[in-house]
Amino acid sequence: MSALATALAEVSQTADRLSRLSVRAHQNPYTLVDWPPAVDPERDWFGTPEYVSLYGTPVWAGLDDRARRRVAFHEAAGFYSLNIHGERALIQGLAARLYRSDLAGSAGYLHHFLDEENKHSVWFGGFCTRYARVHRSRQVSFATDRTRDVDDFLFFAKTLIFEEIVDHYNRVQARDGRLHPLARFINDNHHREEARHLVFGRRLVTALWQAGGWDRATAAEIRDDLARFVTATWREYYHPDVYADAGLDDPWELAEAAWSAPDQRTHRRRVSADCLRFLAAAGVLTEEPADAF
Amino acid sequence: MRSDTEIRAELRTFVRRHTGQVAVTDDTPLFTLRLLRSVHLPELIILLERLRGAPIDVEQLRIGDFDGIDAMVARFGRQP
Image (cartoon, rainbow over the protein chains, first blue to last red):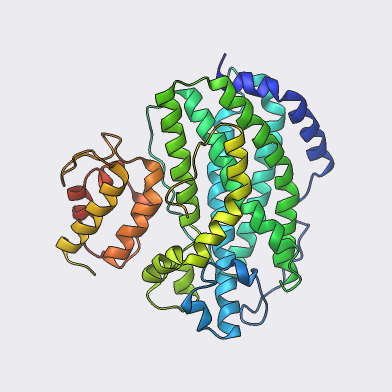
């Protein structure tokens, strides 16, 4: 029996409860949003200004209000693009595990997970393709010779890290009364849906880590991979293409400067804190990711 | 855009930061030896883009493109 099969059996009651909630919360992504024909990036806020990746930098201080709104708009498209790419990887990973011979009994919640991630991408893609564009991701994955159990664990642990950081942004932006109603809706809807995935993810990652029973060297490699993933995930929030679309000069140098800015380091540490506390309490991580902050 | 020498110097710094005490030369196959892994790529790609001053098409990448400093300079050292 694989570690994932063991862990899924252990969290089956949670998965069944979440499945019932998913059925109750079932949505049609094609009818739920009344997309405006156009938006004005310089009039409305589409992202919380304090969560813009340039916030606290000299460049941000030098922008007028219209330019700040424009940056926040393109960064919203960048944030939604990150979600599209993250969900695409998630959909691929879930599909690869759906009805795997040892997991056939656990297909129920995986179906909901897959379905809901696809719907989220309909909303994110709907915004990006109507008003901006889908920005590229720099997350590239090449095949490895890791064991299946390690691959399973890294897949669900990385999914959890990605979703925990995204969810922090969603929660803040859903409640931000300054934002355009469409931006608030997209963030709020995603947060409500992800709440179920986060419950599942935390329970599964805990059970899977225990079921894995890895030796010290493998555990160290897993920890190193996850710590690096935290950094890689955050790096994507400093997107040169977004800065270029917002009309800012030297986008790569700007990304580097923003990444290193003290206020941004503090921001990343604060936003990551809850997720890292969970991973430390579960015994998965034993130290803070060195390069992320 | 930086010179070949500047690009190599920045890449060596990046590689040293992630490989620690392991001795690495410009032709060390970094991914084959698993000194670097997929999870390093976002940082590495953004560094390469900054050094060459142009985007990299991430949908057209192979592991061999990154498998050593020589390979990276050959593949990404010039603007398209």
